[in-house]
Amino acid sequence: MKELIKNKKLSIISFSGDFDKLVAAFTLATGSAAVGYDVNIFFTFWGLNAIKKKKGRAFTGKGFLARFFGFLMGGINNVPLSKLNFLGASPKLMTHMMRKRNVATLNELVEAAILLNINLYACEMSMHILGLTKDDFIPEVKEVIGVANFLNYSEGGDRMFI
Amino acid sequence: MITKYLDITREHCPMTFVKTKIELSRLQKGDRLEVLLTEGEPLENVPVSSEEQGYKVISIEKIGGNIHKIVIEK
Image 1 (tube, one colour):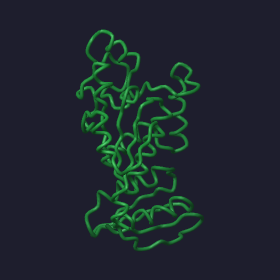
Image 2 (cartoon, rainbow over the protein chains, first blue to last red; image 1 turned 90 degrees about the vertical axis):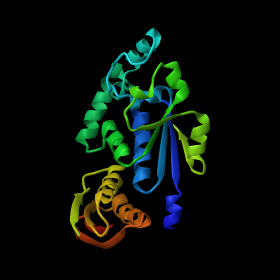
Image 3 (cartoon, each protein chain N blue to C red; image 1 turned 90 degrees about the horizontal axis):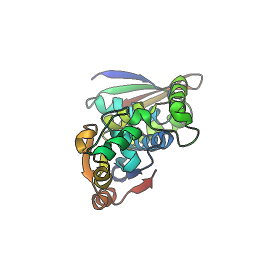
């Protein structure tokens, strides 16, 4: 039984970068890691905003357009709600409600993911478009990878696209 | 051998499991963790998933209302 649990694996492709979808991804990831799964999260495109070192709006990236996009996209403290965003007010209200009801906030879930040694990977291709380097991300990001490595690392487990 | 204490009665999914797992990972072999948790998913799953990950559940005791105390040994 112990061996069986050891082989369980969940790999999440975090694409959307929306507040609520990131909460869903990190909730599944941390919950799975806590019950003994190996967990990988592959951040691509909008999802990369969740692992940027600069958590607010900043001119991140190389090149004028990339830096402009970097500013518009921002970091984890700027991610929008997928519905009813109201110019960014809703994620802040939602975080307030989560705290009030003693539910883990997005930042707390990310901290937990790091403590649980969840493997965080960044997508090479979207980093290239956005002019980002590994140094633009939190140091816990393990590796910059592409599709082939993602398939290798997620082999034999469940895969999810969020 | 030391015993640490954790109250997850006010926590919700996934932090019930997450906090237990993080505390367990900080213990040395032979140390114990005493966890206060509520009936429902925490009581049904924390002891089972701890056992599955190689920890030993020493006792489960109802201490009033819907709150239970479980002792887990690393």
